Length: 362
Image (cartoon, rainbow, N blue to C red; front, side, top):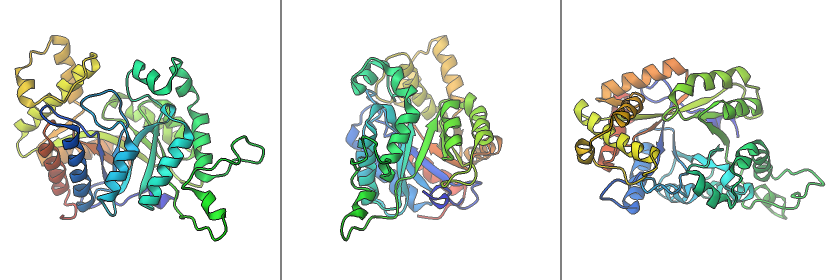
């Protein structure tokens, strides 16, 4: 990976590059097929309007989130786009054997050379019981505790550089560098750049020590954003990958033509989060369902707190909110996720944000 593969260029009047995080959400009255088709439409829109990258995130056992297989979704998106960077935000490394991830993302790199990012997290992306089923063990902390070792093993597979005497020295991730060592072999000069993702200080420090780019989940851990970014920058060690820190933050944002409609949409999305956090995951409810729902005092407090971190309103209001967030955090890139229940509303939101910043016309 080179710095050029990490750092994008800001478009229009945006203060930093803008990117997209798509959770492939499934709303009430719709199917996973609908959600995946919307992801294709959104990726095409993002590419045509100058967004820098488009990531999908690994989640499991959540009816309202159809992104359990990031590599599969990314292969589909690669077939429907031409230029935009595609990646995982992220793949949850403890859920998988490092060799499997190296093979999957080596394949993606072969399908879309120079366009693939490999973002890695250490959380399970689900509840404990589902994580146990994924990992076939009840010792869930072991996966998180072993994350640095798993990361090192994955990197060795991506670079095909296990040292002599290592038990994996003769094992190769294919597609990968080993193909260039065969007679008349030619290998792509690219390999998926690794990002570390986090919502606390652990991955911030690890990314800093390794000199890797860091993506922070501001959209669901806002109070930890500035401490984590400060830790990352203070601890950063230059590497062959980066000569200085590069920090991206995920931010939930929704722009609509009228402020009232934005409030309706984010309230519905917040109801979906209430149900998820109380062990009742389901499809993303409609605004009408949210308007009819009687929130308990505790639920109402949660919704107010949650929506306080969602930048929403008219395009000008959203632009002002994103600008303020970038100034407060010093983020090098903003990755926007719009989790409104309406698929057309989500697409329209990205259009409005692109227009607000004068991004290239489609």
